[in-house]
Length: 387
Image 1 (cartoon, rainbow, N blue to C red):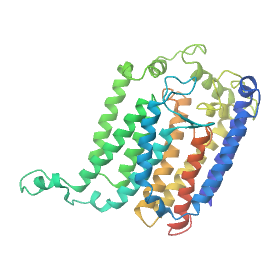
Image 2 (cartoon, helix red, strand yellow; image 1 turned 60 degrees about the vertical axis):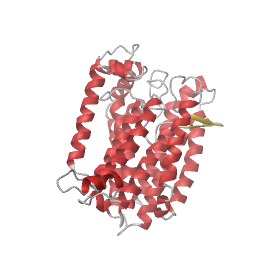
Image 3 (spheres, rainbow, N blue to C red; image 1 turned 180 degrees about the horizontal axis):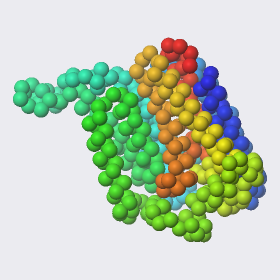
Image 4 (cartoon, rainbow, N blue to C red; image 1 turned 90 degrees about the vertical axis):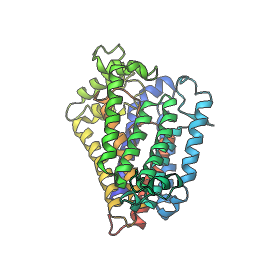
């Protein structure tokens, strides 16, 4: 019950903020102040129904869908690169238009990675956490040599995970979706940690991460063309609100204007066509302006509580699949929220990452609520005691 209440609280506040942040933009650009609220509310209603239905299922049924969902995600990631992007997004192959709905394959990919990793890791959990030699045909020649290199089952599994994660990240990167690439990579590494891989693997990942960061900082031209000015603007702080940092600077002005208690719900000045499309990635800045530091900390507290309860559900679950799935889905929400807040506050460069439950986007909200339903199903079916 606490997990459900946290989800509903975030969803309700998110809907309020979508309306509060977007009605000016909608009035001038859509001719209807309620345009975005109506669409988001419709997806929210359907999403809550999906969440409640998913919560009544036996979570073990999702094992059956692990491989098919991963396969579908790869197909969607390839198809989105082949179709014409929506008008206004010619350089971004991120969306598939299905009638009035824009589907983002990277959202499916995030769920697919968590679901497949949770299933496969639970099936091979003992091998991952032991010195069991691999039975794979290519490994037997090595393992039968007394003085030769030994190939353990955990190494074979790790190679599989890296291959799947690498292929997914590569396809998402080709969409010109750098933030999605980083998020999926981080989710995969987190799943490896939850599965019990030792520190040596993470030292390697850490070194790779540091090298990539240094490359991006020193040679931003290796990034997609749209991302290069964002890195340069982040490195070279220019507080002229009319320059390349227009969106970031106005977001910072909004946060600073809110003070401790905020200017009041609906009273934001920066949403008056200063922060571009304030209902999207920078909605947290409008929240800070209207609800102040207290409101911002309250929302951050709700996200922390959601991750904590999700991990608690996983820790108290009886089997590894349930534990890995619950913790992976909860971590995804927390990580994405943390990255979004870091972008809005200029700690990280503007990467175009949305704030869960808050940023406008129907299919993303629908998938998110479905995932929360799975966590609720795990809480109901796999618990040792009620959490």
